[in-house]
Image (spheres, helix red, strand yellow):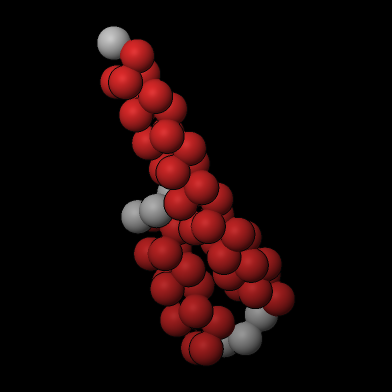
Length: 56
């Protein structure tokens, strides 16, 4: 999510500026949501990992 999504968004912006279309805007909006979700999942995973490390 954190690597592929920004790349897809950059490609979408490139094609959107070349030929404006609503389909590209939908893909841009979708990838705009997935990047913060990836950060949240990363932070949640790190939190659970640190709790497990402390109990062992």
